Length: 327
Image (tube, rainbow, N blue to C red; front, side, top):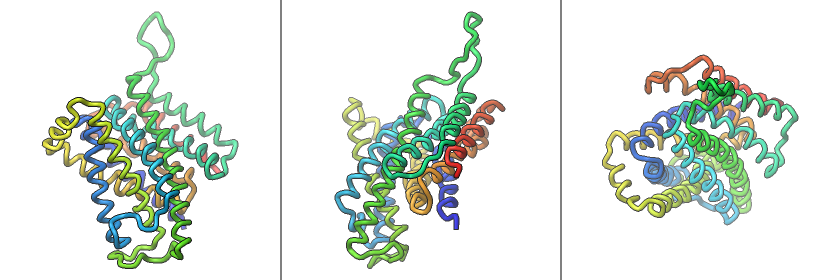
């Protein structure tokens, strides 16, 4: 009972940790080197995990439709979304970056309605307004210019853009992943493997319904690694040099490792697992608690001044996400 909800809460805690480590690592390395190394580590972890739970280091019985949807999810959620998220961390920090991730809930609900036919009630519009209001309360302040009495952004516009895009991509990518998992389940049914079965030769006898979440994350990680590496070498003249320099930074590499464990490995796999036990909207609602959970550790670790206005903005934004999926 409430398995999906409990997993989703664990995802929020995991993403809080990965956001803190990612902010430090991405600021030291740069977004593309950081993501390239993180995807490499993640893929290695996932292949080992698949060997333990499936008996082979690759997604067994995944058909063309499964690969298509999950690769598309990886492009949206990893290549575009994670790039924007790390850029957001660089410009505005993980605390505000995670605040914009509340946009993933409305995005997931709208996309889930379009692609999966999931129900979305009229109160969702109220939730969307409340969520956006909470974000606005946190990032807007009165203008200091005596000739202008309006509001101004107290954060760099570039950081706001990247963080907002990251939130949208996460919600869209999650629903695409759910479509891919549905196709994966159908492919397994076609060969006579049920969700409560166990793969032959598996070292850890986990149910197929659990194992397929790691397999889906592995497929997404493949395209994530390819996408980030190509971006690194094609859009930077000294991309490989940046990568070598990043690997030599021991503190940054520890941050990459921790971010990998809590993010693409545990967090993303668990987020896909959560969508199998609850709707994409409810899962995103609980994932959205991260902006609140991250306030205290970010203030302590990074010596950030946190205002009451910013705390209220985060709480209101998350409350809006909850309203978005009432009923």
